[in-house]
Image (cartoon, rainbow, N blue to C red; front, top):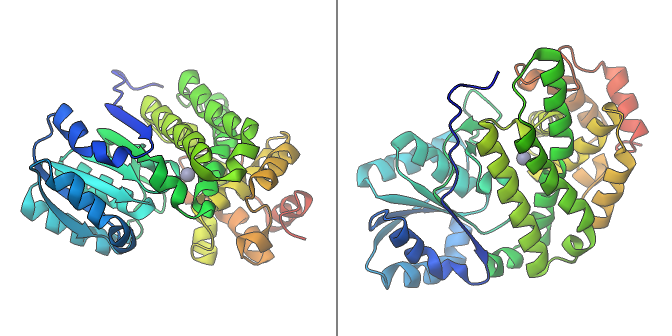
Length: 352
Ligand SMILES: [Zn+2]
């Protein structure tokens, strides 16, 4: 059942374009967030962008400090949390790829300070979603936080990041195809709340990746803008649903399981992409079309391309249903046997 009342929190401003880093001060002023800013970023991104950030924030009479987040492990995130808590800023800026955005989002929700997401890569849909992935908490999946008050995606910066990161974002988006099928199944079988509007919105971002596969594979600004818009849409779908259901199903459970079995062997979106092939086979859908799309984009489709052993894939498949038992998917309550998992991976060409 849908919660009553159903409260939807969304980002207030989303700015996507070339050179939009410069607009950070304007957005902060427009949203009347204050002038004491705390930037949460990674050491590498800081090395590249510290001059730009300094210029942008200094000229506008802001006071700012920076916390460098080493990893998304809970210990490192707690360090950032302590630094931010002592300083009590008006607004937190998460600047970077996955770990900085996740850390900023988590700390912001815990301390009740608004947060602006400034992604430097388009590798996954955490950039605008209300969920944070922190390693080392009791849960391996993401935890509920709050969506950013604003998303500022500079296409010049994002298109300059390694192409592998960009197309990983496309992989995360394709995962919505099976996430939505799993959600419908849980609705029919378990009576779980299902929202068709948010489901359709998530699906739209995946379908857009299929029709734009060639543009995406070319990389560059246009590719980055397609992926960013898709990632923002699917994040908004999760905000509307009030859960990660429209964006995360059995393909994500497979990816989380592979993280455990093989210690984060590839990028999140790459693992989700391979999971999507196999889960659409289980759903009786056109998995070949998904595989072709992945190939056209340049995403991995096999164990070898993910850099894992065949047995890792099989093991991850057999344990995926246990990752988040309350999330019912095509894997069912009991999951796959070793033989069924092996057959699935072989038939879809993920293992040889
Ligand atoms: Zn994802």
